[in-house]
Length: 498
Image 1: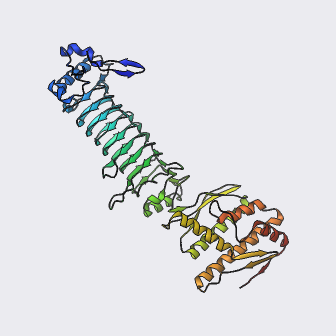
Image 2: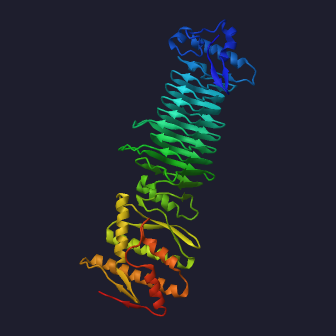
Image 3: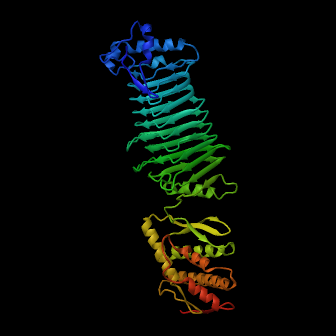
């Protein structure tokens, strides 16, 4: 009697294959008392005709009633067993759960019902070519070498859950007809050039790569999405610089009219944060393409501009949502509480600051208004200058302070104090900014006496130009504008000091 034992549902389970003892006259036992199916002694197994015993077992299990399954669980497979499964049509589910494949394993030119490889270990390469499967499951499978799937069809659900890959992954020229789950899988390819490659794939139904981690080069090419394809909380990690290929490639992705492709990172783990670069090109979007919490600075410039511009199109099909980093440097989202009638003041002040910053500091700066409601406006500043964020933020603070020093309120007088500079461009920049700021102060001041703007709104408005977590310590103060407005309800005296 085989000494194999395993614990299942809090019960000790013995050798399943012992009941077939009469089939073999007597199942051989190794020196540890394990049968030829459970034994880990490869040399002994081959000497005692393991493959012949396996073939006899499969034949016997196929002859059992149709409602039964072919259980090949907890088996240590060794030797060349491919001829037992290839060029065949199986009418029963096959369970390979908790087994170990010592040698390379290939399935080709065969048709299967359900195939289960839960908690299965593959010590060498695995190849599935020209197979047709009803349902397939890999839960906690461990691939120590490459997995290759080619020219195959999966008609019912496909599950690749909690699997570990220590070799490349190549899935090509195949169709997933039903829901497919590539969840919590982890590839551990390090700095090697081995890839995770999906090419010429049709995802007919819901497909997700949620919470999977790719520590490898990743290449999705010629992918057709008919329903949902989600990359939620997916981690791409490959920071090695390469001269030819990108860390992550999405090329010739077709999203059909009813399809939806989503990339959603998290606040603390932006999508593509940990890769050198992303190549995204030749996409055809008939349905929807959505990004949230995605780092667009990893995309090449042409792809980034193309996707951003696509969001502005009429009947847009590309959406860049919350938490996306579109630019190399981007401030946190700023939120100003202000009435609908005064929102134009925020926009005007933002644009004045952007113009001053760009012309005075030598770096490009932009502002993007994310949302506008009746009581609030949300926006952020951005720049594509390749400089450290600390330097970018410091430059914002310096420019904000120098801009507000251009004007000064004293009692009922608004004075201007342009910087002394011999460069005509600097003089013109300061003059243009002074004119804009005078106009803004007059607009703000004129509203206050009539109750059209509150002190709180003025305070919020003045922080339009400030980086996060800083305090206005130069230039205009709220009470000075309030006092100025009260004293100049009917007219304003502007004193120009050259």
